[in-house]
Amino acid sequence: MAPPPVDLSVVIPARNVRHVIGAQLDALAAQAWDGSWEVVVADNGSSDGTAEHVMAWVDRLPSLRVVDASGRPGISHARNAGCRAARGRSVVFVDADDLVRPGWLPEIGAALAAHPFVAGALVPVAGGVPAGGVVTGLEEPARPAPLASAGFLDAAPGCNLGVRLDVWREVGGFREDMLSGEDTAFCWDVQLAGHPLTRAPGAVIEYALRDDLRGLARQRYHWGKGVPQLYAEFRGRGAPRSSTLGALARWAALLLTSPVALVSPARRRPWVARAADRAGRLVGSVRHRVVCL
Image (cartoon, rainbow, N blue to C red; front, side, top):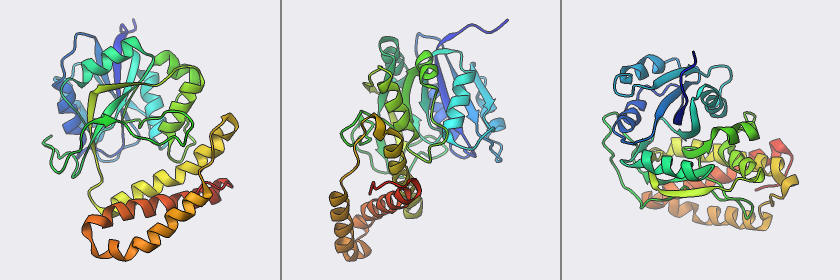
């Protein structure tokens, strides 16, 4: 006999996250909610013992499960595999290296009971979330998850995003061929299917910022490379192309401010982020044969 459905499934895509996922599982175990829920860790082919490590929390998270999501590398495949295994009427996606704040679960649960598609808020935390779960570094105020949509549709990062399972099925899940920006594509697919994105500002997650320049540059380059693909995929549905003149002005600003960025640690980090993003957009434009700089 199949196990009964639950109100909410928390899906965590995971690949070689043994060193960080414990803090997130501890934070989830500390949540209190009247609804029924489960945690589904979708293991995307980890080689560091992530799956075995996760099961150490099975007594603190009685509905915890690890499912095999190794069929294809990528966070979209892992999220989709987690949804296919989910017993929840709704699913909410969180990342292994972030941290849900107290009260997150009842807030996101209440939002999904009232709306088919919701996004919580993020608090960016410099320095990340260490294994002990104590947050270090600087914080910014909680705010809705920011993701520019270039005047098209609303969007939010997939690390605090909830959707009713029937809506996920309706749109076919996350696009697994996206290089990046898969969460934006999912947001646009859901809204184009007629389900608005509703904000749940009380459902707060601490989002771990990259604390080294190399990691930050890789992340922003990866994000930038996905922007032209988003435009190529959605221009037929009305997505506008970014301004080429505006992009050239930003490139010029990067060149003019580079001497200051080299000598000023305070300005170096944002400069690297902007430069990596622009480089990614350039490479993505060539790859997808569009001009989206």
